[in-house]
Image (cartoon, rainbow, N blue to C red):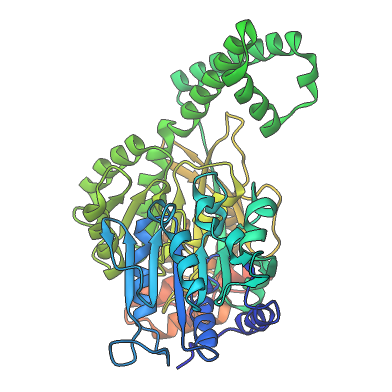
Length: 537
């Protein structure tokens, strides 16, 4: 039974076949790369009865979902268990016999054994399919050892390739990066398909989403320290440029690359200055990411969001995540969990399972959930503090974009410190396929300021006043508007708001959706009167 495929997946598989079953697929998170890989396995199984599949993942947390996906795959491959292929695991504390039809490897365990196993199977005449999940992780000196079998695939003394056939499929949302051309393309094949964010949105492959960019401010003592660190950085940079004027042309990441090299291999004063600059830069970055207003903003934001929606909160620091966890646990006992490297494998797995089954509403994490993990239940993401790397930003957004029942629109709330040099836009280059809203949060009075929403609400309320409706209807409208202030409901199509109003079982819920329908009209600058006949008393 072939998994049901999107058109892009069918197109991609055709190109994969035409490229002799080799290639890299660069597709946005949530578009269905795992399903594509399963369909690829089935296609190969139709042309050979001696197929061995090797799946490499960057983290052990990805093993369960890959094992589940492979176990659910109905295939005509020969196997020892009533048509179901054997599945082995190497990594995460487990080591199965390497001769299983399907083998799952964590990269740390694959480095020194996978290449030898693939080479042996090719010599024995097997067709070997190597699926490199999140393949951008496998370009480092250690990780690229999984490809060491390649020079031996062709044996010059025999004048032919090994009896077996090597097939490959690289999967990533952000494949292009350091080592892409030098390592990944020779090992896995060229990029055969690119399926970006905007295209996936237009085709309806992933969930529609909106980004809310929230400006927060330093506390007075934090601002003072930030400015002092900035002054020291400017002074240190000036000293470096005085000694090495050639660095004046280096900006951004290239400047840091040069300083990192000087800090390692430089000598004398220039080495000391390079190390001092990098240390100051780290301290200033930490000052920004640990700003106290961030936790206050998230705490207040969670009170305003739909309590029925599950939320992923991303941070960069385990102490910051732990601090927020203890704060939120008082307001949401037994409904908030955390997932990070110091929790332990079993505790992390338990938290993830509880989140998937719905007993946890809020899951706090650092970088452990950035890649690969499938949590389609999450409809809301909050970037408590984040990286400036576009790759990781796309990965975090991708955790929200998988479609699931009842998820109409995903929302990502991005916090940044307005008093700092932190990027104010989640995607600085900009994309046209989604909505962006700009807000600010004032810690002193624990209030959000959302000019676009307030402008639409003001116009709407003016129309309510103009109709001389009873005071209780006006007050009810105010309550509904306050409820929707930080939610995505006013971004939904008018007809969907109307349908939600018709389906509401309580008067207050019906009133809310009536107001959201009107707000949707004002969002598009098409004023419409508030109908008293549809408002509940």
